[in-house]
Amino acid sequence: MNSYDKLLSARDINRPNIDYYIHELFEDFIEFHGDRLYKDDKALVGGVGLFHGLPVTVIGHRKGHNINENVSCNFGMASPEGYRKAVRLMREAEKFKRPVITFVDTPGAYPGIEAESNGQSNAIAESIACMCDLKTPIISIITGEGSSGGAIAIATADKVYMLEMSVYSILSPEGFASIMYKDVSLAPKACDIMKITADELYELGLVDGVIKEDENMVKRIDNIILCDLKILLKKNEETLIKERFEKYRYIDAEVFC
Amino acid sequence: MLIDIFERKKRRWKNLRDVRKKNSEKNKLMISARMRISMVCDNGEFKEIDVNLKSNNPINFPDYDEKRKELKDKYFLKDAFVSAVGKIDGRKVVIGSFDTRFLMGSMGTVVGEKIARLAIMAQKEKLPLIIFSASGGARMQEGLFSLMQMAKTTAAINGFKKKGGLFISVLTHPTTGGVSASFASLGDIIIAEPNALICFAGPRVIKQTIGQDLPKGFQRSEFLLEHGMIDLIVKREDMKDTLSNILKLHDVKRKMA
Image: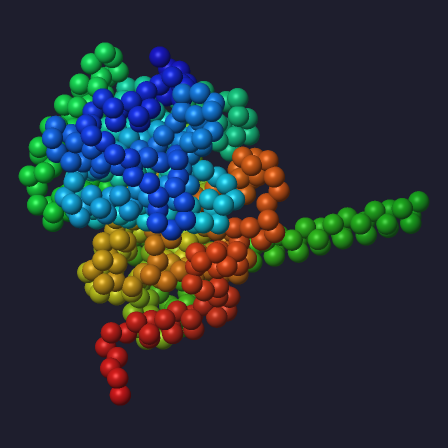
């Protein structure tokens, strides 16, 4: 499968969405709502559930499986109120010492008038900043499309994984092709050049692992989260923050000459 | 016949004058990094640091090396950011600025590393940090490495702020995308130059998404001020005095008379 095929697969409307992962991985999940300022963003889901008996906070983008669902959750494109909800829930998780698990699947943050005027830049920046000093373990899984700032806003984690067919990029290949080649139809070429697939990004050291997608996928995800939490929960808060800082401080160390 | 030639020449000169005037007005919004820093430092003097920081071609992007060499030879810039130490009315500051002449001021690994180092230095030396942002966003030629800079810069600057550091973020034309949605929006104080384009998603993308015209002045400094996103709008000629005043007001050594 080439990278363009993987892009199409990552965007497939039938691909499992966050409701599937919540159902399969967590028990007694309650979804919470609102940013306490203005609105509830349906494109960004957050709540608390039990993972092997341990309370965890779960956050992620919601995409729909048909046009009606997608319209109601804005195709997984979050607005400032979504990122502010995420920050609110992450601070709650910190207070109650709950790990945070995020599921990333978005074509990007919503590029709308209200989103901009309500501070989309500010909301994304604050979300990244919140994750930088959150005193509780964070694990992120890119399950579909991880596109641009709207993705990393909830993926600045201790551990970042990608499903085998997922993609992660600084902007959409269509956007890239349109800017670089002035021709949107060259998106497949853009996919190859940009290096957006899980395998490529793992090789570049930008993600911590690739999760195979087959009938055992959920079990694999479950096991990865379990193993990582066992290690991360043993670390004291200072060490956790320090190591997370160093992860991003030196993530590109090898490129400097 | 002669009159025709004369009229044609007159028209051509007028067009050239109009284009020059438009360009010079456009260019007034953007100035070089070194010029910008010297304009606010005492006697126009500053000490540039991390001058030779370079990166390899992280995702083997075609023509990237050649392009960078061309820009280095033309502008004496190895990348799109200049880091420096200087004094503003006698107060020592750590100061940095983007340079839009280098790939539109886009943020890649070198820019991210320079900003991280500035924040770490400011923290170590207990100095205020001032960054002038001007950027088309994340650098496409470095793929996901560029997106990671959002996390890296935010982590460093957030760490500096949490330890009591003063970060003044000055937004100049244009401040967009991954720069706007990371450290640039996290200033303790955020200043913008007049009429600067400051946004996450650019106006063209928004217009395409919503299929409508945009409000007048949308995403310009004045709009952001009205919508609560920035503290001040300051003209370039007043920038030094304003910064000096802010530094004075944050001088912890001052006591009540």
